Image 1: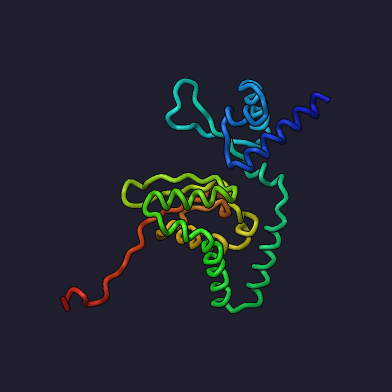
Image 2: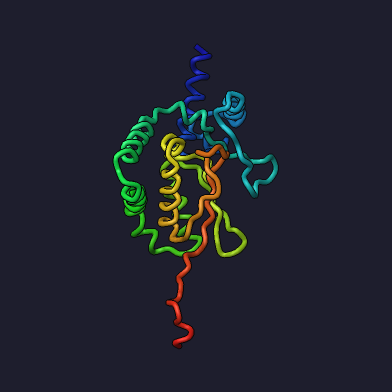
Length: 221
């Protein structure tokens, strides 16, 4: 009986982290009505099983505060049949459409996915818009962080991928997500590394979109 209760508690921890992208001991303790020590014991087991990883929160005083998130192994425990469907649709489209039409199809997906969020995002600028764009990703169970690049751009890191199954078989999915995030952030996005290619994270570099002056404008002015 005790073993079953322990397993049920750990499953609730996994469910909480999946729903909220990440959480700390305090969050989990409040959710589970457990002491910090009890929560840490369960997290230690999940860590040994390769189901959670942690990162240190900046600015914590005293004992380092850690935020926990699911690993890809844990994510795989949840059904994702839609990934298989997406892969099948892309494979069928690739086989039946001319290359240009296929690329238009993929690009169109980015437009459709971005559209519901743009009315709000378009009212924001700079770091506020990038943070809000990351918020859109987090609402889709993506663990995403954002920081400046020291100049006028940003570096966004994703620890999980909402399209991982499809992206592992179709590079066009990563291109679509690059386009999607650029639209959400209102900036030029370049995908520097991907989970699908074997990296431990997806990294986007965002820079302001450049508006080119008409050719010869300086000479004619």
